[in-house]
Image (cartoon, rainbow, N blue to C red; front, side):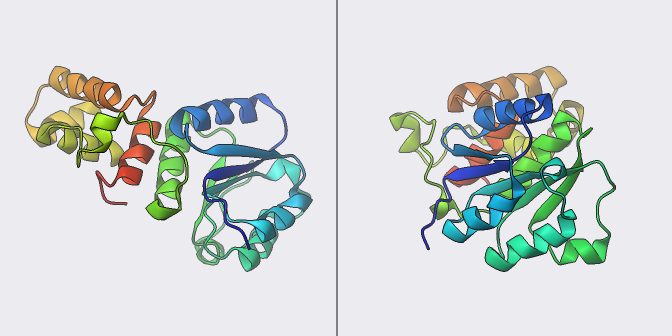
Length: 209
């Protein structure tokens, strides 16, 4: 079977929710190809052909219960990370245990919740499997990290979802200084969002997955 880890497979109807999600993905993962499918029946065929860095699945595209579909897909790609959007409550813990690399969100999830889920799931893909191009400049790419020690400390706390005040308290800094470090992190990497920054940081090995 061929491998295509440098892509995200999105199975969702053409709605405003999908459009917002695609915008977030393009900003977070500029080097990854986004493949769209509106029929869940095709997912098994797609996964038989190749693996993906991430599968995003909206329950609106399938008449099959998500847990059932998930188990079918995992039978093909057991380690496939997936993010599912549903109007129902998340599955129970025993059910989730059968789909260990899957995350569950409601369609009403906030952008922050979606961002956190994306970062968590994309971190699960081996760095060697990412084929997307880096947004680093050649000068940055030759350096172990383009950041100062303090910026790297801030980066790790940002990825751990600390707010500015919590980062300031943790590092004994002012909130204004933390904000300055956060701007520097985006400027040095060319990332447009902190989701993209987090994914890039893991891919480059600046922080542990």
